[in-house]
Length: 166
Image (cartoon, rainbow, N blue to C red; front, side):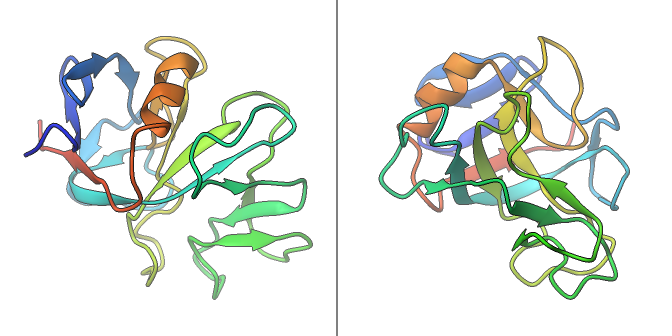
């Protein structure tokens, strides 16, 4: 492990010598991730993208992509674009990336089950803003807004995200 890795620890997410309180999935950690289980997948992953709401903030990094009202993420195991960024209209189940709340104003995409997704192994594992401290996610890692911004300004595409088994 390196200080440039994002490492999930029992006390928070460690990055560049700092520790950030975070929340994980309501299903805890798992080695056998499934769509809808609410668990955060164990393993060594990579940052595979970053998106942000340009109407709410400036680009946190030169490689960040903007997200608009038609941007979605497919979570339908029957969709050929399962676990991919798609655009509306989209005839399969999906999650809106542009939300009325601030949870997805800034998102780091983890390469879990991506880009060659296996149906039902889980989709949309992100690092995003939390609702409030300690409130679980649907499998993502969530941080306080200021911490997420600090990390996003320093993380690189391909940075490792290490989630060890408990």
